[in-house]
Length: 444
Ligand code: ADP
Ligand code: ASP
Ligand code: MG
Image (cartoon, rainbow, N blue to C red; front, side):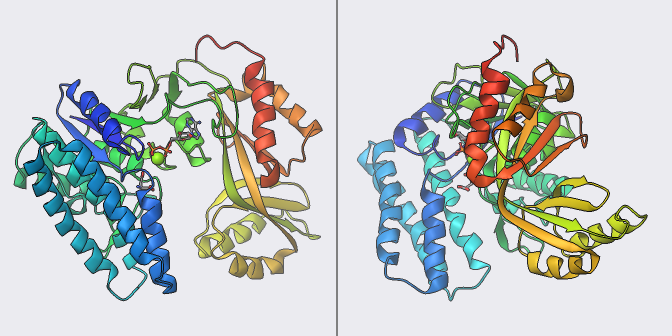
């Protein structure tokens, strides 16, 4: 069985959905298709939830109207026959009434996830009926029946596997299953999410749970590019990436993949193909364990980083000192991304500021603390990157921009630089020129 995931733009209009149908039809193997919400819908749902939370309801009726009309318009375009259109409209209206019931509850913390995951519920329903109407028989699965995931960072795949097998036994057997990305149930069986962009991760968790032959992630770009195309011109798609390279790039901000996408399939050696729904013939990117080439491959950047420096007059590297520092972060359940040390100081970065005040209060006992917020980690990735003949050029960046930290050696496929976020785009462009635009890459 294969798993195919289609992102927001791929299911964002009737025309795109017709492309998706053609892609599904062109492949014979049994499949589970994971869909996102239509593009823009999750943002709208977040807006609705924020309005409810702040009890500023004046824009609510128009937001609800826009949401409903967007889906009704899609139905009218996908179902030309008036009778099927009428029935689909009616069923959708019933689903929308359920949504309105959810939002009419008094706001509580758990409500947000129930609201924001409705985009996937709406779209998967319309999509499944559309395929059926076009002669592609399929079974719609409710992801809440099997995506029991207590920890987003560490999903228990055997539990998902067991629940998914039970679901498949219970539902009508098919060669084509449709389900929703993004949603999960937490340890108390309450509706939650895999965080924004989480449908990629839904796809790889499901692929791991059914031991799929491959995962295809269909989006609006022709594969993983060697730099962020939103900020840099002249980027190009990569034919191959290793699991490690892709994991590193995704974790350090490459928006094309949710940060945790790679881990469930890496352990089981299930390849991921990144493909463009709008140019399906383009080769895209294969992510697998094959090392096709070594050296510099790609750059990504992750924002929202806080750097903390602890400067001590005492012998900093004395035995036990680092453990005490790490214990503070551990106690406050805050992960450290980058770390560098010198004889008198240690610098480290975090991307989660929730417990920053408490952490700083405790660190105070160990020395003088400096905090720099609004930084970005720039991550230069490639197997054995340090031995690439062009890698030295990245240090030329130091002539042009202030760099707060540099780190290499945690793994042999990543060099990380920390810069002020206001210099991030310039840093990405400079690095692109220095590392990629000078050389002609024939094979990647
Ligand atoms: P989807 O809705 O299909 O999940 P996303 O918007 O989440 O799509 O991801 C695709 C987008 O990621 C691209 O349109 C592109 O702007 C952005 N992106 C950021 N970094 C990269 C990269 N290194 N390679 C390709 N796309 C990238
Ligand atoms: N619809 C969700 C989001 O916008 C999940 C996804 O698209 O992957 O974040
Ligand atoms: Mg995405």
